[in-house]
Length: 446
Image (cartoon, rainbow, N blue to C red):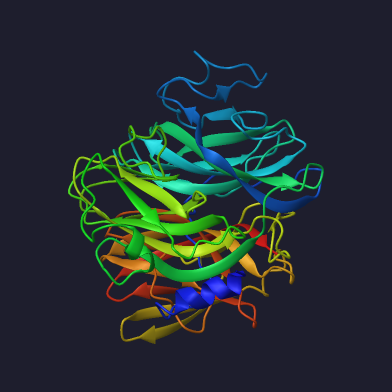
């Protein structure tokens, strides 16, 4: 079954359109610096790991190395990342990721744990200058996740920087890698991305696509697994990209999404998003179901919760004529729009339920005309009001969300959004909120 057949079957259940994805930028104050691609051309094929792997955990001393490449502490970095501190993390040749001349970029979930103040984390390739962008924003005491796609340096490493907005903030850092993009110097493994915007699973509602194989429609209890099965699974498109939202949680904790039927298995050692009681939290998730189209979700929290899965797209198995591929940007991550500084504020249309902002992609010469989707880190900085933001292609807004926010809560999320035929992207913000929005381009799909 081709992707168009899958899409037709999915659309029989809902009338959603466009290709969107989740992401997060930050209020970085780092010095500007060019972020160049590696000195070999990527073809951007994506390969999911058999299961997610934890590459860095500063609580346990896992994964960090010093400037000479030697592990720091017992097996890696131990202790919170300090103010303006930089650590290098070896990626290539470890835990299922191939050598540095084969891996172009890595896809991973990044979590800041137990921060002592407010700040941001910037992640970029080894051996290169730190860019003026950010991947995760955090505030005191809140564990904050975000999905990151970052090129791997020619030394096989990536770097992480802690920018403390308050001058004192420290925090632990976790890297959970789910897959990687290959270069054309290695074997042609993996596949290309095809966008799709559609609600796949909603534990609150029986009218959701995967509900037939997901069991009862109810809260996911704490410390429990739930199996989710896609009865339309097609092995030609084996890797799923979702925007996952946790809502109505009655306790703090984490959510994990892993391949296969894990019901009854021990708790997983990796996480996809962390949440606080009463807060809606979204994050981008890439998961490769097993041969039956099954994956599992685990509630590692202290209370029950609901979970929502919105399709962002698929990666094919490499045998389908390429729909797109991750293409490294020549200038690196860069700020595309910032409402605080009037940088590319776009045109605003006021609707009964909120506002829609239209941004002109063609006006930014750093983005090539061949790009048909952008990989964007979105950061919401609400001053007042609770609501949500949806990044979309247009003209019709899908019934999905990129991120949810509460007043005073800085929220980032990584997103993939298709570029319309007139070279525009759009975002919608729900009514009765005072909000600043930052968009950092992390790359594009051609």
